[in-house]
Image (cartoon, rainbow, N blue to C red):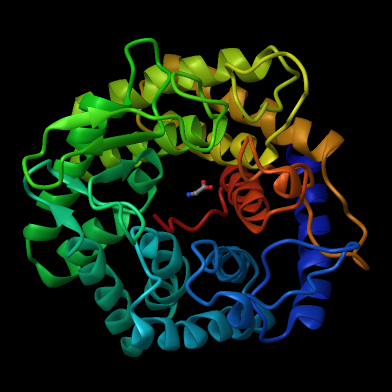
Length: 370
Ligand code: GLY
């Protein structure tokens, strides 16, 4: 296994070194004809995925010490200053944006300016808390009553800020949100809803609509991955057993579904058999969540989570990765949402991020970005 991981690590390093040369100061999202042609700084600077490229480079900087990774990661962080200035457009996903850029930089280099950027992002996230329904509101515009499972992955920014400022408000907000997610988004069988809608004035639960999955009551696989990893991280930061139990329930459900399709996940576990839509990003994120769980369970329980993650990451490597250094993106066949014809079976930057995090975790070279 060690040899195999070293070989994959070498391929990642070669590929990302070449990509840094091509990407330069740009922020990539997906490819067209094999290349990152769009610069998200121009297209949509506040887009929720804009931190993952830098996050992947900070992971590689931590693993290799190569200055190219550090410098290229800094470009995204510097670009985000304009998103902070504009304010509009930023939403609950500031966790993905600032943990992977400014906070990663601060943690690895001690850069004071990065710390301030991270605290700024955390304050925006805390300010989205709705005390009537005890949730952090999702997105912007006319959706003040919406919470989504994805946001569990953003609340580590609050735990970080709370520790940094020695201010328990941040963790209180994060916990309140995680507790509400446990109550209304997690289902008893280990699956979860994507979205809950509350009356934002009274906090009354109004609806559990289908989101990026097949429909209401279905099981969008990336949402399940956000839940399993998000609850595991809530456990890491709070030590509350209810979160670890929820993460484990979701993990068992996730592993069972992934195993039935060769350890690569379909976009929705409860969709009709045809057409077949894969979502490799869910596989990569879920694998990282499984590795997180394996760190918190007794020795005899570890293999289920660890080996499940290995099966998923190796299946991605064997069947869905492009290792040609002259083309951009590693993990292919990500899917933005079940009903997104143009966003089906495309490389997406967070698929690469989680794949790299997973491989580095397996090698003991991971950097705890969450
Ligand atoms: N957080 C949005 C998504 O997973 O597509």
